[in-house]
View 1 (cartoon, rainbow, N blue to C red):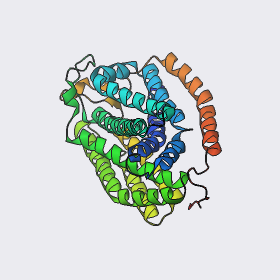
View 2: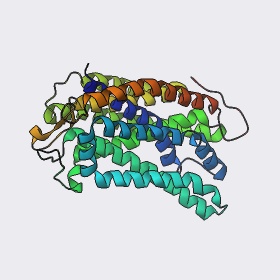
View 3: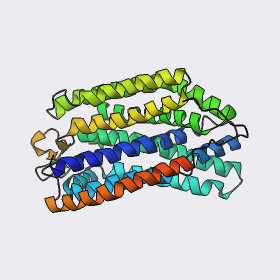
View 4: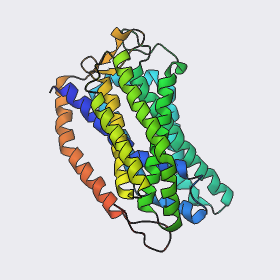
Length: 340
């Protein structure tokens, strides 16, 4: 395996980790206006992700930094073509950060409602735009022979990419509900379980259809055969089916594992469908960026590989330890039993 392919896989791994971890953060945020009954339950929902949300966003920083270093042409084309979309994501993430920090600065119910709504809006907006943006890499955007974006902001919207945004929103909300069944107690935990059951079928169906559509788009827009993209797509649909079954049976731990796997495999389907290109050009397919044409020099990739193999395991160990330390349930006084 050459270093260009290795770094494409590493970047896909970072994005999959980001959506698996930040996905339930976004899901909890989108449930804030609907799930809690009082301020105590809202505090519990914030507390459930409070110790980990910023660590989860590190995956995004690493994915962006790795793309910039390993595939500078890809990074440049994405930021020129998706500039407004990425600016919107940044605004949504900033609003989320402010909501965590500023919400408790006042006891005013109105003040707290504003920042609760801000967290929900930021979570929804970021999820939607990420789905639309990643789907565009595969569906194709107008690029010239130099790899520069020649379209407009409105070229990013079509039925497939919008469907991708909806799928990301629904899957992350479902993922967040299953997470809350493991991290909350009493009535809030029961309500999260009921919400997960209501979300299970629509989220699974829409996400499964998007994954299937991704394989179809790969064959039509990226000149791919059905294999290998069909493999992660099939595994994603199995994970979604298991998530529905485990949610209905109140096996909350396995339901969360299944939604996490679905988020990872949905991302894997997108990147497997994209390879060996990193950005498809439409209608001029010949202008598409490939892993070879968009990559850095061999020496740069070699140095990056040594650093990644040294640092990444330490980061994984540290983040795993963080989740272990903050594994206890929040909200209420009584202990709740975990159903794994």
